[in-house]
Structure formats: C-alpha cells, structure tokens
Image: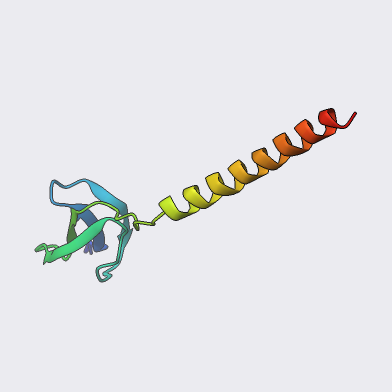
Length: 95
C-alpha cells in the first residue's frame, strides 16, 4: 500500500506586516492592482505558495476647485433674494 500526498499551492496578497488584502486562493496567480496599495515584491515558498507583498500608500482624492461653484451659487442666491425683496417692497408700496 502506497500513499501519495498532494499539496495545493496557494497565492496570498498581503501587506508588509502580513495583513491579508485579498482572500487566499488555490493556484498560482500574479500580482493584482489594489486601490491605495503599491506592489513591492513576490516570494515563493519551498512548498510552492506564492505571496505578493504590498505597501499602503493611501487613496488619493482628486482635488477639485469648488470655490468657483460655491461663489457662483452664492451670487445667484443673493440676486434672487434681492429680487424677492424688491418685489415685496414694491407690492406693499403700491397697495
């Protein structure tokens, strides 16, 4: 009687401190792109497991210039309020 042991290789995607970024999967897969992480290196263990290591760099938020939009809305609001005030005063003046 002869026993044959098989081992299924796994691929891991982890941070520098070993925290998993993605769930471990069976098989050998390449590095992936994750928001907020930069790929550093890949290592293969003696048993065939592959580990891809990433570093957290943060998620960059695009800078938008909302000051123009805010100024524009404030200007429109102010003109509207002056128009309502003018109508209110004129209506009471001629009644």
